[in-house]
Amino acid sequence: MSDQIKISPSTEVELNQVDHPEWDEPVICRVEVDLPGWLAKLTGQQHWEVYSEEEEENCISFAMRAQHKGHASKTYHPDTQTVELQAEVTLYHNGYAVVDVDGKSLFDGALTSATNDCARLSYYHISGEPIALN
Image: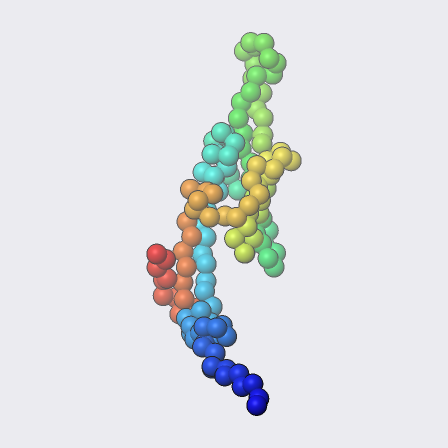
């Protein structure tokens, strides 16, 4: 007498071989960011401007500046001085972003509409047709 084990054929789901051809197609993510508006929200300072940009293989970096007037001393004095703030915003192609202002990190994380209401993300098929997310 021999023991017989009956093996039923595995389903596609069990073998992780579910056919989803739409998942095999490249998806293009386009991010639009209002950089001056975003820096104004992060710093409380207005009038940010981009004065240079540098593109690398995996990211784009923007050098920005804003000028605001501050008192020359803590006591009242009619003379004021203009203080320039410097910022570097780096947007990585994988959706990550880093913002440094005057050498201090103000943002370091994923760039989504949940973390930044100045960002708008859109997704497209390789054909250019928009993808609607539910």
